[in-house]
Amino acid sequence: MLYWLTLLSDGGDFFNLFRYITFRAGGAFLTALIFGFVFGKPLINVLRRKQGKGQPIRDDGPEGHFVKAGTPTMGGLLIVGALVVSTLLWARLDNPFVWIVLFVTLSFAAIGFADDYAKVSKQNTAGVSGKVRLVLGFLVAAVAGYLASYFHPEALQNKVAMPIFKDVLLNMGYLFVPFAVVVIVGAANAVNLTDGLDGLAIMPVMIAAGAFGVIAYAVGRVDFTEYLDVHYVPGSGEILVFTMGIIGGGLGFLWYNAPPAAVFMGDTGSLALGGALGSIAVVTKHEIVLAIIGGLFVVEALSVIIQVFYFKRTGKRVFLMAPIHHHYEKKGWAEPQIVIRFWIISLILAMIGLATLKVR
Image 1 (tube, rainbow, N blue to C red):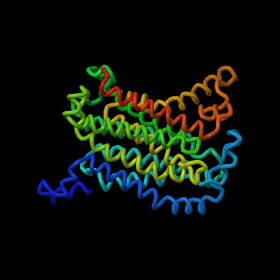
Image 2 (cartoon, rainbow, N blue to C red):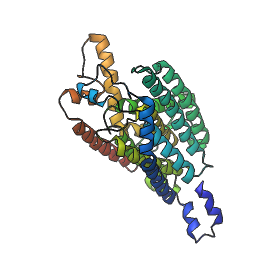
Image 3 (cartoon, rainbow, N blue to C red):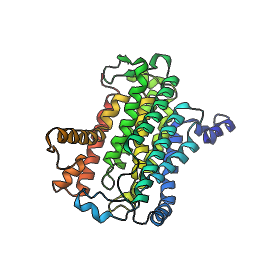
Image 4 (tube, rainbow, N blue to C red):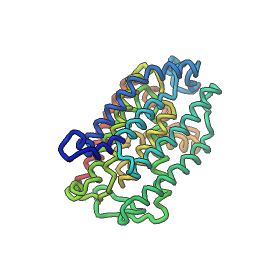
């Protein structure tokens, strides 16, 4: 919205700053951060009054989690609110990619909110049926995948770029939309599975968002793409504003989610943020790189898949408990120890993912 202040500029005054994505990205970060600090405590108070007993705790979960009973959930509303406000305020609203990632984020936030509401109101961990959530997620992701392909340059439409092998473009044809669905829905559910300890999911999400902000800015500039020898996606640089909103809103949320958490993100936040990362990867043509940058989320999801598959086949477990962060809890690791070590792993993976921009 503020971008249109450039209409008042003669090219050499203050209003000219709003032409620059980096300036508006900084504004989005500060706006989202301030939003989180201003509305965090009031939102937590409202959630605590409305939810009563808070998020129900799994009976079969780690024993140490029962002390968290009564903690309100749906804290993702704070992140999503900060993200939407900062994006609408600072991003170019004539950019279709901005609306695609906003559409995915808000849609998955709505799915997560319905699930959180069902859990809190019924005081059980079942929530909305997994099949219903998947079907809704598939529909949202299919629309986003189709729109992203439609607005991509013709040379990139329905194609998947390979990291390192930069001249390789895999033509998916009609299979591109299903592929985009797997990326977006997979990312959403992987982040959701990671959200099991105080502060565990939000920092890796911010790290991944920061990495994809760099990627979006790079592939959105023709001079950078020529130097890095990556595919140029006109307009994708505007996603940097969105990712900085994630980081600002995430930090505001982390202020209240740091151990011991005053509020949980809930599916409202985890599904929204995971869907956002997946849609950004699709928009920037870096779907494969998402598996590297978001490697922690991939491992969390795989640990559940392996555990379920192996248990059904043999009746035995590979891990003491899945997702894998619970495995380390069972092994006696303290919660902050697990969280901080997983943050470190996320940062390392993000650096490796960014390195693919230059390595070939």
